[in-house]
Image (cartoon, rainbow, N blue to C red; front, top):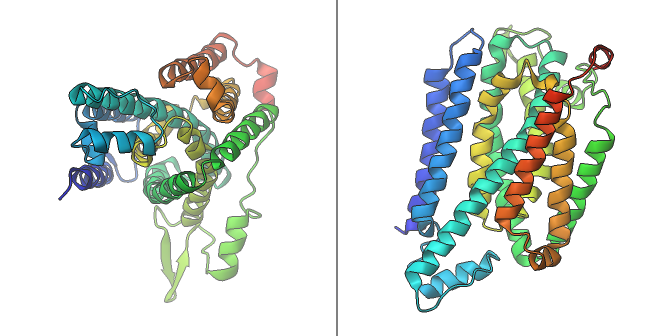
Length: 352
């Protein structure tokens, strides 16, 4: 068995174990997740991501079963690392590669983690519109994120295959990200409303399936007179899955601007997604205080898109992954600081 297969298998097992622990140990039935527990779990996920970063720094070469300079050169070329490898120093070249891989992972993780905040804005709207009890948030988010892991896996490796065969598609990704960033900035103050009765998912589900009109605790399905019916909670889950699908269209191209290695894209995505649930419970009651965060996310998407469009020029001016990470962190910190320093006034709060 190759080290690559062991590495990937180990990561998948790790995901399954953490999801099982979350569902079995960290979830308290019929009780909302407390702020304290959300804070602890958020910290745990960040620490695990940093631990994985250290793992890559030391054993990242196992990811592609690199055991010779020839293999390293092949991987370097295939994933557009453009590292200056020393043919007379395999150990040094290997460490250079691992360092680059680690930096790509942590940068991708920061980008994905930041963009997932926008998911939280929408998830709050969905839960509010459907009057979902806070006691059931955890279950919906758990299964929503489990589904998102599967969808992201498919999206990422499809995207990687497209880039491998059609490198020009990166320019389409870049243009799309710039458009999305500009659109997000223009619509930053626009009220977002969700009409449960007229939502497309609700209409589609009602057309082809039997839908129970009332919530039945945390159940997704109920049997009424021998007939299996969806509950509104399952419809909420479907809408959240669709929402993540839409957000994936933004976030996955964004991370391909940082790394072309599909495994690193996948790892950083998954760590960000798995931390989304605990971050939701941490921010759900204070998310409106960060009103400039959407401006920051818009700037982030536009910056990444421009970097993809002007990749050759970015290299000439020295805009490497490390400097990109610093710019990304600066954008996020400025938007958060601006939100805290210049809070909404009462009239703005009333308008939403």
